[in-house]
Image (tube, rainbow, N blue to C red; front, side):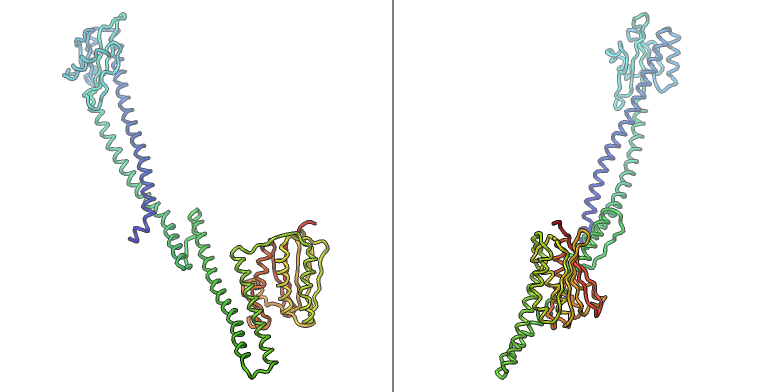
Length: 462
């Protein structure tokens, strides 16, 4: 049953091709068969008429017994027969024995005698094909030339032609069936493999392999399915890694909250220790809140529910507003924050979302910079675009980690999450927001010297 299911498409395709080609071949063979046969009959009858007219022409000049006998003698050695009669249809000369059929034909030719032509043309059932040619002398009919051709020869030609056509048709049909079976298998075999691959993919197996070396539509389809399989496998792995990371990120603050909540309940704690533990619980609650908020933003991006409402914005004013929000935190840690912005830079962005990008970048710079260091925000015209850079003098990022810092939940040093409260989603969210503004974001870093995050976004005219 499995074999039948797999070859159902091949069978349908083969039957469709076979039916179409058989109909086409049948029509072609019928047309050729009757064309050849009718052409042969026409040639024979035309030759018979021409032969009778030739004898008539001779007899019109010399309608005497010796000439009539000479004509009859000529036809006695031919496949045709001749009968010469007078104007009353009495037989004067003949080349062969006059049979009952010949007599009947001569008697029934009354309507054709005066004008001449074919008397009997039914070669399929009549014994003879016959013609008549009137002999005229001085404008008067003096006799008739009857020509007869045995139809057995024509029927033999028909039978031979039929046998030959049947043999050729059978051979053509056999070659057609073999060719169609071969071609249908060639066409459907890769389709069957693709169907099996999609079935494996739908059941959760993404380790499929399809041949992609065909330079046609089937090859393009195979490559598309292979790419889909690879993408699904990658997404499956990413989902597993993402869920594992999220489980870890959620479990850690919850463990802290649960543990310190139990400690706070102890009656022998001093007020100072109780206050310190409550602050830890508050910090972990805030970390958990921030993580959930970041996850909510990422979910909206994945579901295309993360919209940006663009408007023309003066970039320098927007940077000034962001600086005003974060400067207390920088001053509290003893880190200088400088800004530089070319005058009259206009960009088309969602102010709230773009501010979120800058806040995420400045938050990272703040966390990974030590007291006494500085952070700079620079915004300049860059050809037709605008370039915004956040430059810090922090720890820097190893070269092997730099390509992955914009991936979700990726952290260069997992142990630093507790120290800085990072979730590994800030840069991923920043990248999504920048790309929704048709911009790009990249990073340069050197260990011990700091990191530069660069944003390039289309500018607009004032």
